[in-house]
Length: 187
Image (cartoon, rainbow, N blue to C red; front, side):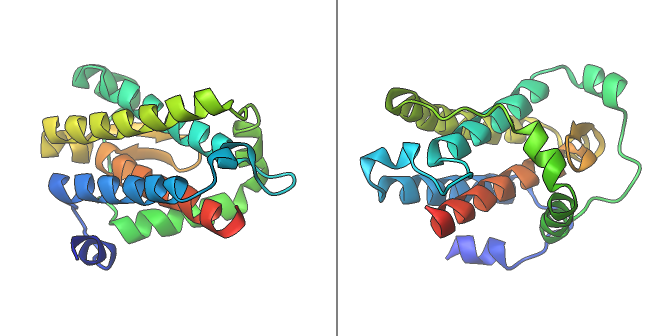
């Protein structure tokens, strides 16, 4: 199975096709889980934790911000954020760094995400459609970028700091997996 192959490999320079397959797999796993839940799952969650709807709202907000940033001309990204001055990190390293940063910055993450609202049923369905569309847009944008731009242009991440675009896109796949895992374990 292709998904398992990608999961068990550490790619120093994960190719665009691999990244897009990873994005597709991680999002499909989330959509499959949601489809298997009761219709009112969007409004349920553990006490003092996010509802399933809030998790989806957060993922939509995150991927939309990335797609918006990737819509700017490359010279603007370079001018505003600069170029990478380090080797690319592989997927596993990105995941491990994110988990470490998240563990050390729980309060910061709570403050950053404090305004995520629980959507209505209608809004939840719209958010799922939006997430599917934004995922496809991100895959398309990934394909359109030259490898040198994916590797050298950087974007700021609120928790991880500045990262090459290729790493931010790989992180986006993991971010979806992270929230899917939380939903599966707690909802």
